[in-house]
Length: 389
Image 1 (cartoon, helix red, strand yellow):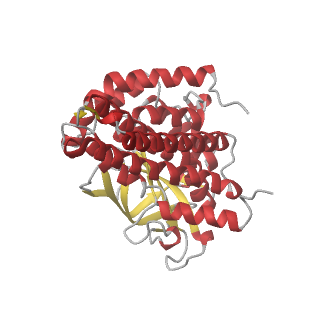
Image 2 (image 1 turned 60 degrees about the vertical axis):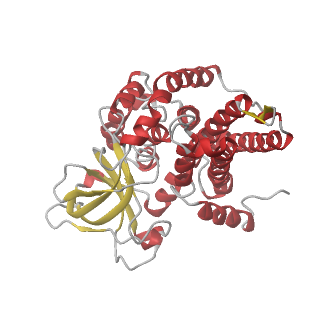
């Protein structure tokens, strides 16, 4: 068992750390205040070849894997969860294609993501079907004009990167929308400029401002036969399972950034004749938070290693869900502690901890709520997928 990163991954982490400190840290507050998409930082990622970390070399990526992307996201989210989301969106919509797409689909859609000429989004959630995937109402019917083609109709909501996307991976019912059979769900690639596709609304958010979350509406959108991805409901779950460490990395980086800022503050802030950091009660809170961050790191890195080995099927779900659940909860806890350690100053915009606090709340919801993760972990233990003898 080796806990050391390879030379390549260590070098990647150092490269992203420098970029985050020099380019992202100075821009984080402005991005939050304006909500404007940070195209300049997307261009920095492009220049540093960070947009294809998860994509194999034969499709234009760097084959750094989920571990490489996890490390990169951890570094950038020490300062901005928006930029962590930007990197995450290089894997979330490409995952279904890498797992179950045809060679033609991989060659057509993956290189553009890796080289930064294309952006994509993942369309699963609906107004009445967030965690309840089987409750989705978006559906496809056979296209009478094209053999093997479909017409797609429905509404997807809370789609991260929806306004910037050039194409979407959309999950829809292939039969009766009222049916809850998992066999009746398919995945489809839809181009943003397709007739019948509209983006009528951009959501106003509490945090993670700078990458739009949007509603995407499909009205009899034509889907060609070569835009159909195999895999069905299993593809939904495998795609999300493989993403757990990548989402967890956002929580891990946020927790690290919040605690580091708070620690620097309490070491310099005088109270009652000494610095706040000299009080034992403060030290204990810092120690507990630091321990939880390291526990989250171990869970996250283990999950990333499992996912890179292709171990994101049912029997590995407990380990994958644990990292997403725990890192998200630690992010909320660490950002809350940071606000408290700064006192009144922590509530003010002149310090970034209130930004961390707002952004952390999203992590307990996206790509499987904390409660969904607990259910998945419990199901795994009850079914002996996770067992200790």
